[in-house]
Amino acid sequence: MAEIITERASVGVSACLYDCPVRYNGKRFDAVSKLGRERGDFVFTPVCPECLAGLGVPREPIHLTGTGQEVLAGAAAVRDRHGRDVTDRVVGGARAALDALDRAGAVAVVLKEESPTCGLLKARTGARRRSQVTGAGVFGAMLLETGRFLIPDKAFDSALSWWDWRRRLHAWLWLRERPMRTNGDLTAAWHVVKFVLQETDRAWADGMGRRLASLPRKASRETLEALRVEMLDALRTPTTRERALNALWKTYTHYRKRGKLDGVDLHELSVRSPEVRRNVTTIAAELTALERIAFENDLLFGTSPVIYRDGRRVRAEDR
Ligand code: SF4
Image (cartoon, rainbow, N blue to C red):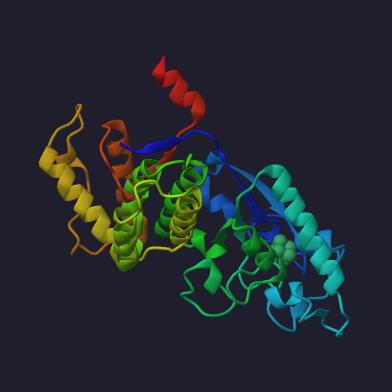
């Protein structure tokens, strides 16, 4: 059975992705509206660090002489097109944006990639763990230090990509809040999130399984917390189309064996076999249908172990 979170996730977002005309040239993107009705499952806080820096719209485009991390460490600068140093202003704007996200309780943030300020990954594609991420913009680097769940704007590129980011975000939010006092708390949490982590990195997940099995009988709080942090970090890794398709087919086959459940004929569920060619939108629709079937029938769907349901709806259904 899936774990449910009933609080809408508070998510920060680069304001230019939220249809605000705040880019240096007064332009904007409307990335978040791609979520359609699902947009209401989140509370968004749009922030523009460059506007909060007082640079205005329109403004000169800026660039970094190093990485965002180096700017924060005082080893690189932020300059405009004429070479003027605007480092202090941009760092101040990033701090103001971070304060706003703190006040909003936004522990996840959607960022405009390749921006000198909000950018997340400018270099080293395929970087997996937070500690390996390099080349962030100034605000991106600041957010990395806080350990937030960072979502690149390319997450909205396809329905499948968003499905993957959303399920990992919800699992991350759930795991982050779990009480973690005993070995049992940690292993119970592991059993919830392990299917996603086995899908995205089998070798790492197998190693974590072995480490959990060899924990001392009463592991210290520090040990449990360190392992939780590793799991949270691992949840940042995206899946691939092939892996998602495998997970889809494995679960579907398992469900088919169970036949009809509570009036739902799983044989009629329109999921095609793996070799049938279909686009990512169709795969996401099939996965979402399986999520719904799993939720309505109390079935385990490890591929999306934690789902959001509106708290008011859940309470009404309980009555
Ligand atoms: S990328 Fe960030 S700093 Fe640049 S316009 Fe968008 S919100 Fe503002």
